[in-house]
Every structure is written in structure tokens, then in C-alpha cells.
Image 1 (cartoon, rainbow, N blue to C red):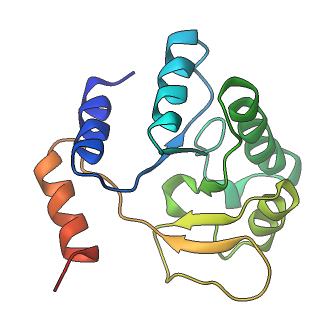
Image 2 (cartoon, rainbow, N blue to C red; image 1 turned 90 degrees about the vertical axis):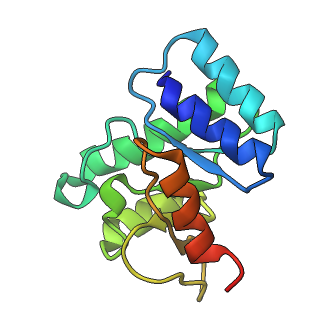
Length: 153
């Protein structure tokens, strides 16, 4: 587990901020990592899918795309307290690819989190939410990004 990530998560907890943590499930095979994710879930943080390998989903063949989305979901379900509600798209990309949306919907995701575009809550799930990527080099910059985007104006 990257120490900077743990420090950033703690800042969110210390400031009572809502956090959804996207997990790339390829390597967190160590029980201590899954135990940390369970701890975060108990603190009210969603452990969401960020796929298995963090591949750019729209360039994958259908079977690879489905594997990335489904296997990550299954691993999180099997190794934590609850299944994820959202998938955070690698590179924030794939919201406009109907295959990605359909694969996420087939799993039962409530939301797809993307960097590009606006929030979209029309029709059936999954809905689309926009995110701000963290700046791992500066917790202060990340908090300022959040404040400027979501804080009081």
C-alpha cells in the first residue's frame, strides 16, 4: 500500500469528507491490504472497482473488457465486507462506449465514475458521475481542488 495514499485517505477521514476509493485488484492479494479496505468500509468509505489491470477499456476486445469489469467486482465482493456500487473508469475513459456502460450495468453497478463529461442521472443505472483525480504529490493541492469544485462559493 502506497504510504501517500494512506495519508491522503486519512486527510479525508479527518475532514469528514466523502470518499470513494477505486481499487485496481490485480495485486492486492495480501490479506493486510484487504483488511485495510475492510477498515475503510467500516469508516464509511466505498471500495469501488478501478478494474483488474487499469487498462484503457474502450480499446479492449469485448471479452477482455468484460473480464476487467466483472473480475474486479468479484474480487472486491469476495475479499471485503460489501460489493462496490461504482466503477471508476481507468484514465477516466469509457463513459461514451456503450460496451463499457452495458458491462457495468450487467454487473449491477449504480454508477460509473469518469473524468470527462458531466454528471448524468437519466434513465436506468448506471448513472455517470464526474471525478477529480487526486494529486498524490500534494495533499494540499487535492484539498484545494475539492474545495474549489465542491465547496462553498
